[in-house]
Image 1: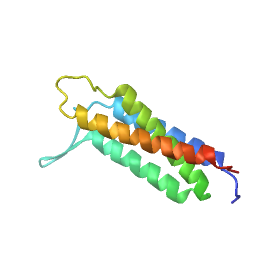
Image 2: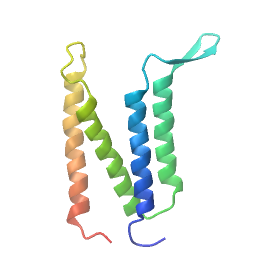
Image 3: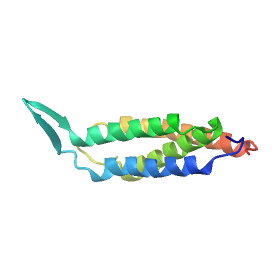
Image 4: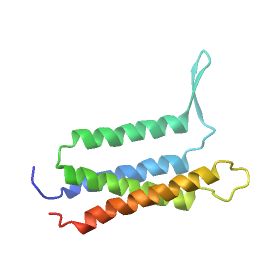
Amino acid sequence: MTNGVQWSKIWGNVILGVLWIACFLFISPTLIIDYGAGITMNFKMTVVVIGLLIIVLYNIFYRSNGLSTKLGLTCILTMCWLALIIFYPFKDPNNSAAGAVGFFTLIGGLAVSVLWVHFFADELT
């Protein structure tokens, strides 16, 4: 391990983040997994939870310094925030949660801004 940023971990986080966002965008919410005996699961939610578990385990078991992990997770958060702004149907009249999602999108934007100010303000090696 070195004191510098490990770019391979950050690029791995970016790739995993793009794949995780693609799970939200391209899997139909009407698909279900039927195990029989009345046990069903939503396929989209199952894939999203497994993808989040893969991202967490990747960051736990890929040993690197804390700076690389924080920068990689900040990249994932930024991509998720941008995908939410671009793809979420805020103006859909049938969407009753648009106001709450809009509020938390603004709060998420504040978090993204604060995190990137941290990385750009310090002299990182």
